[in-house]
View 1 (cartoon, rainbow, N blue to C red):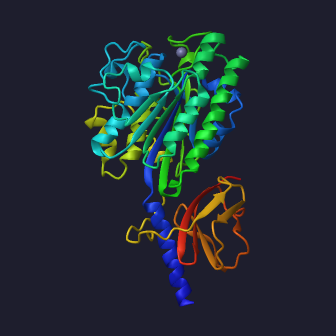
View 2 (view 1 turned 45 degrees about the horizontal axis):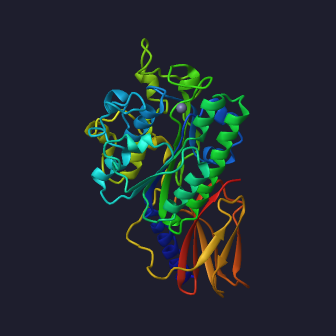
View 3 (view 1 turned 90 degrees about the vertical axis):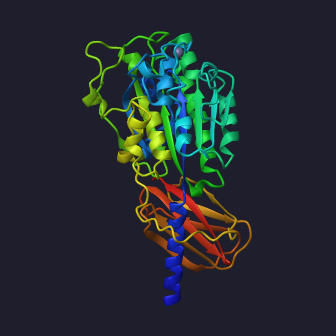
Length: 420
Ligand SMILES: [Zn+2]
């Protein structure tokens, strides 16, 4: 019994240690020109799955100019147009030498981070003075060519070195300009749905990364503005009313603000911006600041001091939506070079997962650890026939778990998401 107990403690420590060493990474997906009401009307199972698991608001607001250049610049830099200087799509007057994009800001503190971007709309790369601005790779794909964008993104996501990934889709905005920004326009809705389908392939590729169990991802999604008739650029609700989604390994499911809390805009005078309401509403500059807070989380005091240091305007949502495991011993490291070759599917799952072993193993133990580091299910000395082992997780509540598997002195940790 004592030996078994020690084994259990070791298994638990190793599993929790795998979580403790998970590397934080950010995926930011931008969808141009997508009205909040249209996103809610469209059939978007992949975005809905992120919302069902993560934090969201259908009542976020564009506080600046409802044009792509200024709005994306606010998301990428964490400051509004009076600082980044971009007031139209020509980028004349831009101050990217003073206010950098979030990968460049992150690299001030962690130079080793690797950042990639797949961009459809050329000005968002070409009109920036230092066209890399923190990115290691930054490529154009055809404007509105949703599938090509996904294919390029999958190539970068297959690289285990990637720490920061930005993906931009333009099809929804292009469709709005040609036939109308409206939830009643079938073409506009269809464009949103096709982008959602592509996002599904990107999220699947993220989960399929060979290193996924050792990574802690923050996934952010936002748009730059809505639209009215076939355009945008003014201050109507249809142009300013946007949305915000944050999901990831340890992001809690919650709605971030209720309807009707428009903080105003720098483009509306009077009344201008209500700074009290602003604190409770997701806005565009929050993207860069939340991403930076997440990536630099292990630097003591980085948030909110980074706001002052880098003169940022946004705020971080992390403290209210991110709940990593509280038990994080670091003394025990996973055994090197003893990885068990196992595939696991489906993931996420509703109840059953199947572990598919590359070689037959006669004596298998597994333990399931929840996000708080507690053991919730265990089976020892399991005798399997064939290469597959089914584990029923149906009794566990929704969340992220680690399945620690040991067989023939080899181990592997698999991260699984349960969604009933
Ligand atoms: Zn547009």
